[in-house]
Image (tube, rainbow, N blue to C red):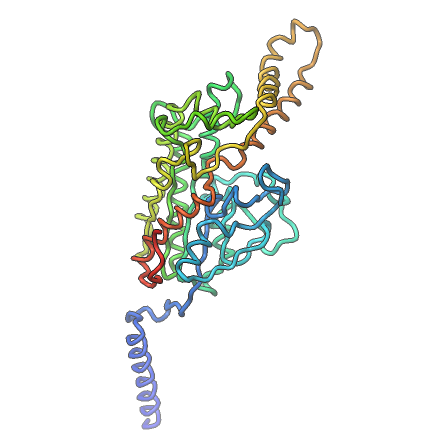
Length: 402
């Protein structure tokens, strides 16, 4: 019995020593089981904005402005800039297909599994030769690849939701309304001053998914920062007419804004507000305390697409003659079925094939529209750094807004 008492005393003493040690190093009582060891890791989750779409090319085919293909996230995207400014460690995967390292953002990634869609030619479908293979979903693919449970992080940033309802498609639809009747580009996302029922349903799924992603990430991170979205479309008063034409070339995005600027801006405002509200609700709904919302909704204000000094990509210079040919081809395919009866048994198949090529040709010139340039990424980084320096309270004195 006396031996047992000595063992009991010894165990109690060890337990007391552990409790004192944890208190000294600042670990609250009752949390030793979930205590995160010291870490300087920064993990970035999200879509094309943190990936740096436009500064890097995620596709297997070359794009105008970037001949290289299947690139990993850009080191000029804001996660790398924030990591450098705050003295955090972040490894960036060298190629797009295959999720490794800490910079896990994927161009086109969605927050909600239910909103998931095909991969737009980024990687083989299904992916092959990668471990783990790249996917298109923040929770299923990116968060899993982060392996936070075995490799905790000091900071996790999350920016996702715009691809769940195809924000780019909303802008595409609004921009092309005056370029030709029924061009068929994009999706109508706003009716009567509000997002459509379809978009509203998709945003509800975004909130639910982001809430869960935040809660899962927060288990193994000192701090989780959720970033919302900027507004790339300028107000009509900020639009620069000189942005449309350059010699014999035309910027198709700026042409669309010149023809339909007021309506496009109004549509973009409705969509941005609805998206950012869905994100803010997720932050509020998440049952964790180590999360905050980083508001970048005003980043780039006055410097949207087609302004005098834009910080967002608009379109690549497109030969005006080629644009005319492409639009003619598209309209011909749309009118062919109506007149084919007058032409006898002539088939519209060839015309339709030409129209598909014409549509792709136009899209090639706007592949990175609405995404931040290097200057835009720096402005986002400044906003993120300024807030996080007050929240994680371990920032170098030179970090923050510059």
